[in-house]
Image (cartoon, rainbow over all chains, first blue to last red):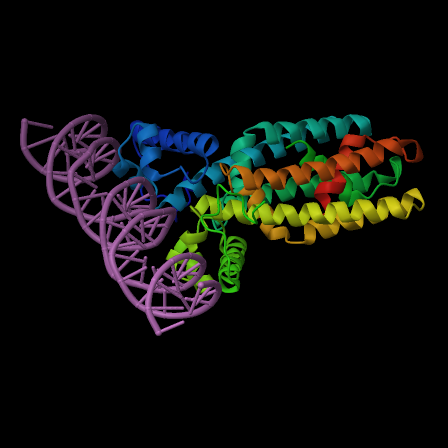
Length: 175
Length: 175
DNA sequence: GAATAATATGAGCCCGCGCTCACATATTCG
DNA sequence: CGAATATGTGAGCGCGGGCTCATATTATTC
């Protein structure tokens, strides 16, 4: 499996400096998205901020959409990684339910704190972008589903709140 | 007070057909924003969709920003109107607390159902637009504040939930 | 070393954007 | 009616956007 999805990466970097170039471009994209918003995130601006030429950018990303999608993909992967890590921790050290839930909430907070501004921009300001954003949304949904499952499984131990609503609060309130 | 804020309306329409033109433009703007997003909402596209020339558009709106701001202003006014109407209803017919809250929630649902997609686009996809969006946000905040006040005043009658969180749920869950 | 592949460059193409302006048409009023 | 005013038109300007390509530079291989 290549580092970048085949549809979006024009060339896979084979030297260190190439990988560094790709990283610079992704960092610059994230920074501009967060500070200036999607509208101001032109490919020329990204290249300038990254300290590379516009040509280099298009050697590794077939389009602006591909660039943003790659960034979203990366962001989603990081989120998914955090999620799985948390699940394993919680399962291996079963404590009281309160502790588990608390632990879980903490992980969700961390998950959303990883890069909240970037998360926000990716979720809100991108109407028609396909795969990358989709991945982010999937991770979001998975996290919500897991919280819901937890609550469902232990609902007898709480006040009879609406599980759907409670899930929604836990997931969104930390953003 | 003119129908459009002075800074944004180039000419105030004095004939019926002019008012109709302005309405067409605002309807077209809302429609494109909702269906295609802000990026695809070019002034040329709006004029075409509205069935008027680009020149006419710029006779009533000094800029694209002014156009969107006017639409946001209109949206906010409608929301504020609904809010006040609901307050009066609730005060004039005092019933049980449950009924009042239920009534109130219904109103909030209506408020956000008025045009939820438009609301979403106005709130999320417009980073730097000044007055109009500000008005929308103010109405949103006012509505949240009122709900919070209701809950605070009657908190003894409910389970001791966190009032902040409860407010957040009520306001956001209906979107 | 030379040959080949990998990477980097940036001037500039094309296109659609926001927006203007010279002009055409409709409406109101004396 | 004609004059004055209000409204409507759309070709096109200037500009910045996404993006390409001929070329230059650097790394690898033999």
